[in-house]
Length: 336
Ligand code: MG
Image 1 (tube, rainbow, N blue to C red):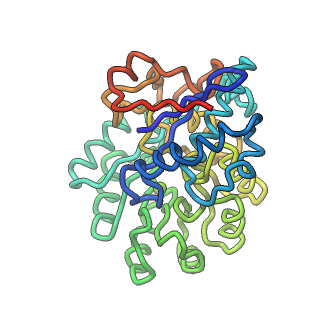
Image 2: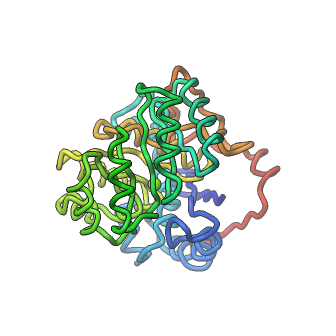
Image 3: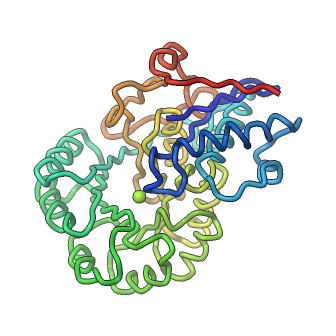
C-alpha cells in the first residue's frame, strides 16, 4: 500500500494510491506508480506554486495512471477540507449519513464461498458480491442464494473473464435473480456488452470498462450497461468518480461506489461517495478488517449492517503515525 502525505500551504492532506501489486485489474501497478510519483509527478507538483484539483491535469500533462492521479487528488482535497474544518461528506452534501455495507467474496471453493456469504448475511450485510469466472459461476451463485435466502442482494463480478462465446453460461446466470452482473467482458468490448445486455434481464454494470466520465456516457448511450461503478482509483480521482455519478443520475442509470484492496484512507472516500443520492446500488463499503490485520486509521464500526460516513475534518481520520512507523516498509520525502 502506498500513502501520500502532501504538505501544502493550508496544511497536510493524505491520499492513497490503490494500485494493486501486479497489473491484473488496471495497467497501473504499485511499484510503477510509486516510481512515477517519485520521479515525475511529485517533482512536477513541487515546481508550481498553486496546485488545485482543477488545474492538476494542465500541471501534470498525465495520460493514464489513474491510481497515481487519484492519490494526488485525494491529498489535495483532504488538505483543503482539513483547513476548512469540513468532511468530504459535508462537501458532498451527505454529512451525517450511514451507508449499507456490501461485502465482496473472492473466488474460492464453493463451501468456503458459502461460509463467507453466510457470515456476512448474519452480520446484516445487505449486498454480497461474488467474484465469478467461467467454471466458477452458476454453482457458487446457486449455493449462496440457497444459503442466504432472498433478502440479501447478490451481485456477480466477472472481472472481464467471459467472452461472447460464453453467452449460454451468462444466460444461465441471468436466471438467478442477481442484482447485477459486473463486467462480464473485456474492458474494450462495449459493443459486445451492448449485445449481451439486450439478451439479459439482469442489469450489466461496468467497472474496468469505464475509465472516464466520457466513457460512462458512451457505455450508457450504447446500452453496454445499465449501471456503472464509480471508483475513484480507476477513474483518476474523487473528482472523476463524482462526475461519473452525475452522468448516471442524468441518464437515469444505476451507480455504486467501488472499492479497491485499500487501507481506510482510501476506503473512507468510498464511504462518502457511497452516500451520494444517485448511488442506487450498495457499494464496496465493508470494513477493511475483512482483509487487513491492521489499518492506519481507526476502523469503521458496522452497526446493524450500516457504516457511518466519516464526519470529522478531511476525507478520513488522520493516519496513526505509530502504526505507520511500525508497519511501514519505506518512507521517502520530497521537498522543493
Ligand atoms: Mg469489479
